[in-house]
Amino acid sequence: MKAVCWYGIHDIRVENVPDPKILNAHDAIVEITSTAICGSDLHFYDGYIPGFEKGDIVGHEFMGRVVEVGSEVKKLKMGDRVVVPFPIACGSCYFCQQNMWSLCDNSNPNAKIAEMMYGFSPAGLYGYSHIYGGYAGGQAEYARVPFADVGPIKIPDGLTDEQVLFLSDIFPTGYQAAENCNIQPGDMVAVWGCGPVGQFAIRSAYMLGAERVIAIDRFPERLRMAEEGNARVINYEQVDVPEALREMTGGRGPDACIDAVGMEAHGASIDAIYDKVKQTLRMETDRPHALREAIQLCRKGGVVSIPGVYGGLIDKLNMGAAFAKGLTFKMGQTHVHRYLGPLLERIERGEIDPSFVITHRLDLEDAPHGYEIFKKKEDDCIKVVLKP
Amino acid sequence: MVSTQTANVQVQDRGNLQQNRSGMSSVNVGQVERWASLLAGGVTALFGVVRDIRRGKPSGVGVTLACLGSGILYRGASGHSFIYQALGIDTTANNQSAQSVRVEKVVTVNRSPEELSHFWTNLDAAQQSEFATTSPGNSAFPGVQKNELEAWETLKKTVSAHGGYVEFERAPDERGTEVKVILFYTPPAGNIGRTVTKLLGNSPEQQITEDLRRFKAMMEAGEIPTIEGQPSGPK
Image (tube, rainbow over all chains, first blue to last red; front, top):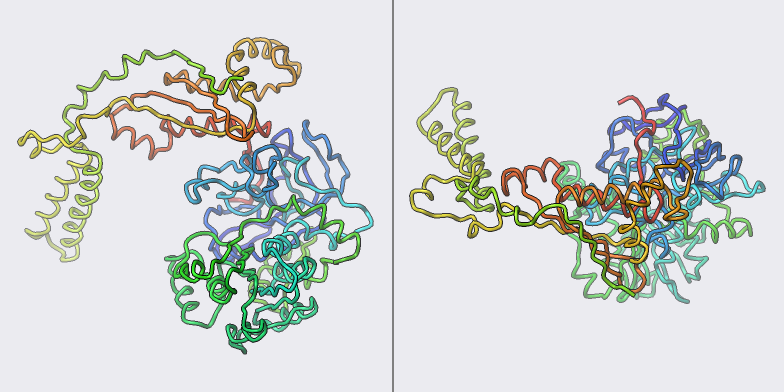
């Protein structure tokens, strides 16, 4: 089959590889009908996620039809049309039973490595480094799906791929980010980053009752899309963010701040340049400019919610500000399984059509081009969907 | 209700654990000191060598540094200091339990202590009946998969091989069972051997950690996660 493989920094290739096989009794094989490039894929594209090996099949947003099931798979059957959540979860450990699926105890074959880095191992993920298990990803014609009865959600035929594909990651991720804000009536929510996750965070915050959402970015097309989602916008290259945020929130500061940027924040300030230099020299893994700003500008007693991915060490984080203001931090990989059903219902009811975020539809073969324009924000690229 | 169940697997006579001490009598430098010696010796020797290479010819200072560094390096590697020997000093922490090591590893498994201890005590019978037939399920443990029994077998083997025992203790608030393995083992070359096997990743401590991890996965998820055999692009 054809698969998108990682070979190094800015070196993504479409290769012919063997078809996946059932390896465990709870596995299924899915023939992929749609898959997408995630903003977090750009982190390994840029070489900032450790634990990749040459030839690794990447991609973690995918859906398709079940073509084979293992002997212990009871609920899924051949021909079922499914969306696959990006974290792999066993369904029977403490964390799965507590609805914390991305923290599953039993799905990471490389738990040892993750434990060394993080103390305990999170769940395995598709196509996202050997620290997270090294599972072959979904930017391919077929994928092996472990714990097939636990993760994949069946999709009724009335919905198109593009309407439901993003249940695999970015819609639940934006939604969890908003849910983590514990939004109360009258709350104002600021969102750093108007990429796909930021877009879903904006819309989810309104679904959960936010009074106003303020979105921060520098690309006009992304700010435009945020405005279409009813957000007030700040272009940080034109406007002073602290001043604008204070002004827009009656001097109180946002009740909750969402960092939908993560480890490769761009910025024009001194701290952003400092981070860029250190990260380039590999003296720091993450550039937390957006996070710093969120902490600094959040109101007293507010929430900083972090869907943006961080991989390791960060510098010069103002813990004093977080402490002095009594902030609450919420973060982590999304517990996608928790949201699949409820968000599918919202799509079915017509409350949201997630396909609004798609700007590019490419053949799987053109994945390297897709990564490039997504990375460079060329051609107003916001979200790339690949068709195998 | 049994809150703690101890399954003792008497394989190794614990009286043997203190033997072999005489073999390490030449070690008279403590662990921390040895690591410090390795580091300091290495840096000093390297500095001496590099200094001369840069200058293009050997010099008195360079050779002295290289020799001095090598000496310290040897002290770290062997754990033996001739100076300490002459002075009758031994910094290996009262000759401690350098030889026998007690290893304790614990994991919480999302199953009840009753289930787990039942498995443990009846394992042999279960295996015999299981492996005698190829049918799924098992007469001793109806509904139990063959691979679950294999997880038990692996764990029991490791525990037996090193001499040790397993305890099952109920975790608080219905959070399953704390499965604790206690092993006693004698590293091939004392503490330094222990360090080396750890670095190589095949110490009994790591082995039991991985056994317990697989055991937990099998008991909870019914399988051990793997990517063995999945496709990838040409390396």
